[in-house]
Image (cartoon, rainbow, N blue to C red; front, side, top):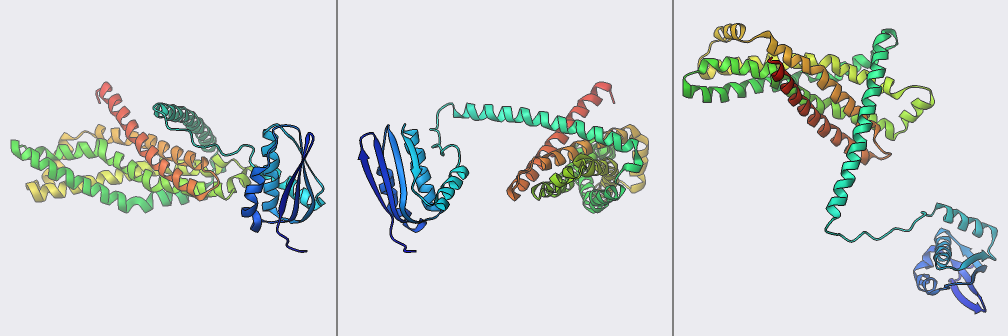
Length: 376
């Protein structure tokens, strides 16, 4: 087959325009053929694209012919392609079927009200995301209830594995965080209380702050960043690799298989991690009070026992299951929103951490208002 350079010749006869193509219409010659193709015009009538003299054509050439036909059709002409070999016509049909339905539009000019449009889109998108998250929460609670009502059907191996990952493996970082929070509270509290000669009240400051608020709140934030991101990344990767679709094909419920063990592991382990954070926070506060204020460990324990009610511990522990449910549901919901790309996994993981932390803090604020109204 000779690789003759392509040529385009236009013949106008009456109400018909004939576009004759000859030579080898290959990708390597497309640059020199752009101008001749662009000069072909026909506002009305019939256009016949004759391919009988083409010696070769590849995908690039088929695209140029298809683009010419579509452009002339939009201009009002009736375009017919004939004379080509069967494989050339089949290639043109394939390229035409794979072409996008609409041409890429130029970006709209920036207007003074563009920000309002973007804000409206964000508001509507946030509304739909909120509905989707609430729906996913309902599915999770329903699946969790069914699994707890039938313990023999629970996936115990998966549950224990996630308890290990989210709970026991997190004890060192949670303990260190609690210890440092206790040290900071003792140091800052001592600095302020020394002005009034009330250094001994640093015990109440540390115990109430740690047991009631900081211990469980900071634990939930660390778990959201550590375990929540891991949930989104792992399940999201399964979504990209179509493993979730395979589960559904096999008749398995992804919420039951993937979400319930993770959420249940958090529900069990987050209160325990919060308790560990409380212990280390009190230990750090006691150590700093002894070093900086001379409050002996015995006096610290005595004042803790006499002036700190167990209700402060219960207030903190009551929040733990709600924080765990929020973290687990948001992390898994974000994973199910992953599209078929690794970039989407990273974006959803980031969104999972940000939304989980925000909702945990917002929920803690609501609990604070609730307990204040109850006088607890």
